Amino acid sequence: LFYGKLFELEPTLLQTVFKNSDLAAQPLTLMTMVDSAVKLLDQPDKLLPVLRQLGERHAGYGVEEKTYPVVAGALIATLRAGLGAAFTKDVEAAWTRTDGVIQRTMLEGANTERGRELFAGYQTRTGAAGAKKRSDSELVRDTWAKVSGDLEGVGKLFYGKLFELEPTLLQTV
Image 1 (tube, rainbow, N blue to C red):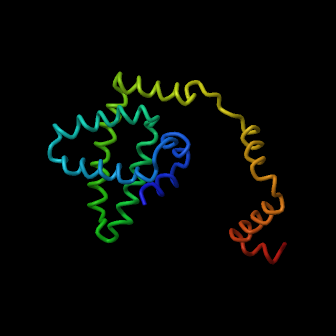
Image 2: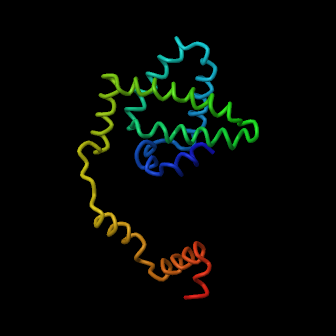
Image 3: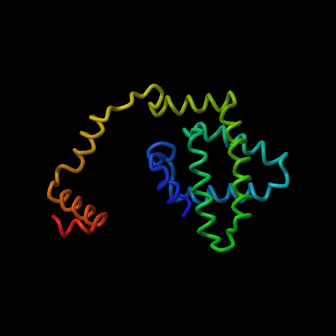
């Protein structure tokens, strides 16, 4: 549930942060961490150092600051779906505030000297450091090459989507 929502919100994570991850094991790993954090909420002296270390480690996986709100959105959507009517406005507000503390603390860890070193190592390993942004023309050509081998199939898919989005066009085309 969580990862489906996360990858829906930010599909690029599959090719970056989660590229070499065991996606079958990841849901249990994440929810175990959430469970541990929830159990330590009343013990910030124990929780916050763990979150800082987690932020450092995640920097080494290539997690950037912009990813944290996406993860938070996926968590809130997961809780909303899992709790149904029990996910009240007060519950959402409490989770949002708590997640804000988690994000800030993990980002503190990511921004330590060790976190920055791990992130730089990630960039070096993956070639992300100084990677040249591809032009629109390159992106369009490369992606068109993936579908152009079946022009008839692509055409049928196109018209299927077109009429799905605008059924009234069936009477005019």
